[in-house]
Length: 420
Image 1 (cartoon, helix red, strand yellow):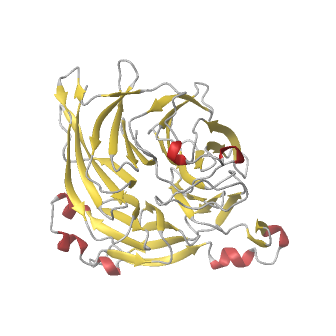
Image 2: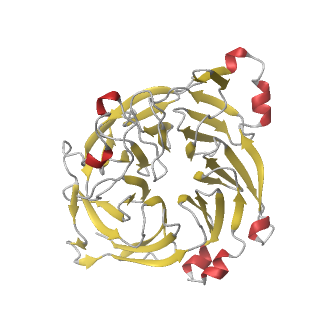
Image 3: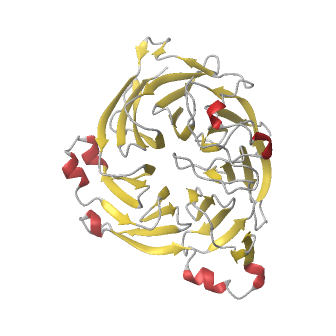
């Protein structure tokens, strides 16, 4: 197995540092004598994966192809989101770009695709993007969240976007400025109002009805914002013992946070309550949790970490928020950096420069690694995927997968999977 290449661990009491992949890795005092270069996959968990590219029932091979490489970013691609006819990307040099999907699918020339496709240049690396109707939300390394209004009446890309808010808003800050109860201590000799993130905002997620925006940060908190007026409704202090790297929401209101403290926590705001409370703490990973993804029905949670494994959790049959570990998917040789779920497929991106496609077998309930996508020259940092609406047939389904990498490229892949 290849070795993980990360900085030496932080000792107890030191500030955490982000690694070259843009994630925070944290350690307790018990691990301060080892580094991630010696981390192995979770051998204590049963393996759910078998290497297989052939559908044994139909004897039909799945097909995959890189159909386009989008060039334009000059620094690491940290975030991707699909919204209607467009793909948005965010980079480490503070840029947000937009890519018309028609041009990317038609293999138009890079000059045509890249023409005037910079939405904005901001003040901090773009760590996460989510889209809601005519708004685009971006999370940044400068501790802020920005809201962009998309004006669909204008055809020129560089004129279509306007920053209409920066969170927390001036009104939010002013309302809480005078009362001492609104201040929280963020460092030994520093305090600020609870509506502020005080470190990189690492992840964003929208509630199923789009009314709430959730943000997670390396400051160990997550916050809840109203999308109609951008007001901060709640902040969960000290949600973790270390930086939060990942955030996922289920349709029935459960919130999952993954942290450099190696834990995944499950939160829920129960009926009649104003604040989220902790439902469960999931502990199996041996190093920082970098990525989370949920199945469409919320019954299966996937978590990826620096320990090279993807842990599979299934919700208990009683319908609560607690998840039970059922095993691990192994195959990547370095840290898992991103995950995405579409239909019954799981996509994983890794520091080993590859993307793996996983599918649960209906016969023995194991996961099959359908394919390994190779082409990026550096770690794969972000993924987004969708069913290709134009290519489903009676014999199988096509998917479009977009991957962003530290090689500054975005690749578009077409995957065809036969029906079983």
